[in-house]
Image 1 (cartoon, rainbow, N blue to C red):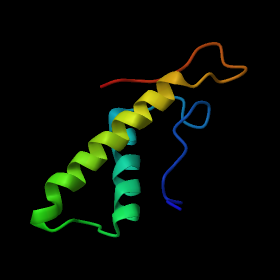
Image 2 (image 1 turned 90 degrees about the vertical axis):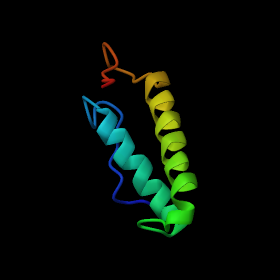
Image 3 (image 1 turned 90 degrees about the horizontal axis):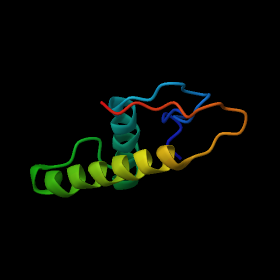
Length: 77
């Protein structure tokens, strides 16, 4: 599922931006909902889902401990 979503954890992606996280969240919500772009009456719930998935993704990346890595690398824009 969601094969176009790239791995965001170091060292696969040493510096992750908010845009990277949002793009992954958007791809996930598109895949799950079956909509590339929701109709106007679904826009609010679609956008909220993207925000929620993006926040959960950031929380995950912030909490990961990568073995062999001197420090975690992540960026908040």
